[in-house]
Image 1 (cartoon, rainbow, N blue to C red):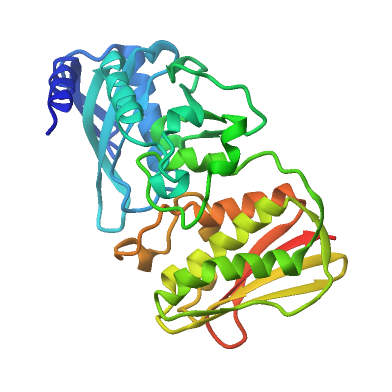
Image 2: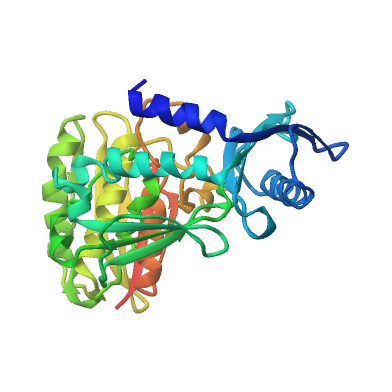
Length: 350
């Protein structure tokens, strides 16, 4: 463990105010050390909200920064679950919030927020700024430099982390240096919200754009003996942000390559009907179970069969596709491909 981390850990332990156990069945909170009544009430309400939310059954731990009367406190928790996945108890600690923020600063300042494969090695501090705000709007962290930019995004961490908000601004002149590909794992996946940028639609011939993406992605597929076919010809024109559509297609191709069998054929097609343009990506993989065809578009959610696999993924690529499609006034979905496997569809108005 690096010396800096050891020092942070010692300070963290020193600033622990109390430990606790909460039984969800008896609704009884037991603690060692004093937890103020208002903080205890907030902690119990928060733990129950988290336990009752739609979290994956394997979710077991997290931390929530207190707001209101609980400001200055952080509740860390670990869930005990019954065999059916129901949360039966939470154990954890009440920690002084001042002990948490050094970990945030250490993570942001000592490790790249965006993987080098996305930035081509450009140091993130020269590309953008980050600001973290708690659920009540109190500032928790900011980078030394703050950029004002049209290329900005904000997102809220889900309930399991207390709905902290992360705000990101990309330095305008650096926007072209981001090359987004397979969305590999990042120390802070939320920063990939940079992809949800303001779009600038313009009439765009779709077939040449699609062919260009396929041509550039082909070597990645070839590494797994896969072949990608692109639509031939066609004069479909739609008002889209070319970079955004390129990103959507890259994410779908990346998904097909990651989860499909070696040697498969991935077919990209283009169709126009009823005032819309559709980009279709067919693979020869296992497909998507009918019951999961909406959930796969949620951020940080992966199919159960893929969670223990060696395939890297953050569970954010398809969420980016859907959000960008909706920004265009369109939609996205998945269905069975005619020849087996999955068909992912992007639909935008023309």
